[in-house]
Image (cartoon, rainbow, N blue to C red; front, side, top):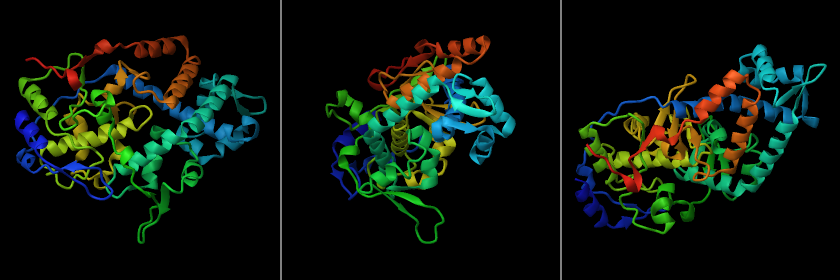
Length: 398
């Protein structure tokens, strides 16, 4: 099966549609039906820990934004509690007070009810601002690539807001980033639509190269016809022979760039599903921590050219994605970006990821010894918790 798809793909020419990257016309492959294989979900403590740690970090960062925006990086308690976004984020006044007291390494409570930032928080905040300035070209590039993944080259601004933290966009990105790049972005409100949309003004072929394609032969322009995805499973996952054989053949199917025109693909085939996996693989690579909540992308089906129940790919491919179910939500994690429970910064470097790790370290220093010890134990989960079975070293034995 795999050999047939490989020969067919290599024997076909490509076609180009304006505004799309070149895409192979997969005519022969449309005979391949979507194989009904179900892989079990297995809990991964290390990745669950990585997701859990970010809950308080995001909440702390929201407070940091509010406090640092005030003169002298200081705000009165009544003024802070008057902010409806703060009350919502912490479930009311008591939640805000408890959080400020818990993380005294970031927030200083002054006499008279004032709240300011500690020296450690101020230092990290300044470095974060510098980081945002220095990495702005990369940020703009990633936002453009996100819009290039969509069929209309645009997204509702609400959807971009949901992805703001994951993409590393500053809170004021509408007034800052978008206004500074009028040649790249425009805000539209179509007639009859209450939503405001962020639209990409022009396509850039130089950006239409996926991270998987870049990694092929070290980015040396090797054959990208049938690229396999890096795959790893939680130790003890266990795969039946049927699943092993299907996964081998699925990996050898033609790879469709997430930036290519998908209109020629039959949505009922494994070839089309591999394209869907590639879209989310690329989308997660565009994020700082290589993860996002499932609900953040659940309303993007038509925009990404996906079939019904498209997020099922996260469950069908647990070796590529891990679906964390902690904190009352579902978070999709790109497995290849993590070693144990830590983001592999050397391989998936992003300057903001480093800053956020330092914020987390300062916050852990405020925890009681017992909770601090549990956090360190979660961090120390080693890469031995995973078994590599993908990419160029895709070897599975029965």
